[in-house]
Length: 554
Image (cartoon, rainbow, N blue to C red; front, side, top):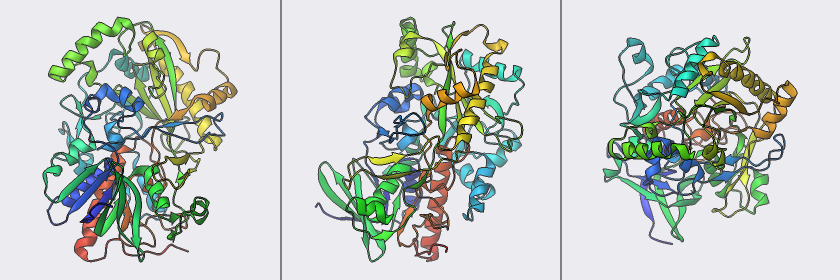
């Protein structure tokens, strides 16, 4: 064991929330902070390139590359579960789409026992995270902020296929929205993204770069946390493995888990915190029984409706695109301009699958490329030009869990999302396909449309479409809920994100969401980091005793 280092706060996980915490907790210089990240520094050039999402999701160099257990309701398939393993976490490898979720999603959290988490109470944290460009109209100022760490870029150029999608949605009579994160989420429109001067702007770039120069912040990469050190009902530190050696850091105030919906519950389980049966199965001594650890896993199911294109204006690796690609590389390398500055998901929509739905229950991303199956099957991209609408159902009812394969801390967690257990999700996706087909049949696509590649012209009836969805839907990478916030028997953290029944231990990441929001999750996780940091500092200054013991509601 190497020399023990001591800090006020130890943060496990340098992802979207961890970067926020590292910045905010070290900002005034009063506290010493250590950030542990299992992956490398975010040096990879594809991280900066917005269109680099394809090699990032496919590659191993900054990606945990997890796989689920076989999904019994989805044809027995294992689902790919990529997660960022580098500074910035998944904000360093995702598609950079800026969506907060519907306001009612957060109000629902309050109804589930999470006081202080209504949309109006969270809006200041969303705003303080933003540098929203431009910010001209007064109506923008209620919903958006200026001068925050994260640059939210206006899109100046659209691929012609993305413009065709906007035109076709209007021709189909769908509503339009100018801001998915403003007064009206419902409708089709242009997606904003985490960009700055032609580059991806991850949470590491936004929150960590400048903060790393502070003498009271220590960032350790390549540090794989193996357990939380518990003493007399309190989190005293973290053990981690780095370059084959076991190391230890001690926390005078708090240990904060920010590993995400897979790694945070795994670390709790490895530390003896969780359901008795799960720990006993792997021979891990029970330190604190907490039945909800790893439960309540849910995620957005996603599918691709793909059309082959007659034109060659989209993204492709077809040999005919190589001269354009060479020019694009030069423009990007020297000027940060050109089509490689696109994150591909340039336009999208939030829609109701049928008129009586109270909220938009479908989200679409339009991408001017054929489906690459998580970039794991690139053959179609080398053979075809095309375009796709990705369709996901916003508020899934199916619930799964995260567990352990073994007591080996370096083994991947057991991931079982239980996709498709609730037929409602499949039914809404079927309705989404029918609606997307209506949009893609509009005159705006006449010059581009060749033939539907998936599901294909032969798949038409509801029964055929349902079967196709179960055989082909995938994850859109929005897992949440495995250390859920609340006061019920399966809650893991209270509304101040303190682990029930333990002192000095919090969880601050996507795993605390009691229910999944309708939209991409990075903005909400950033907000959770902002609010979590504010609560930690409030408790420290107020002498409440951050991590004070809380009791589960009966």
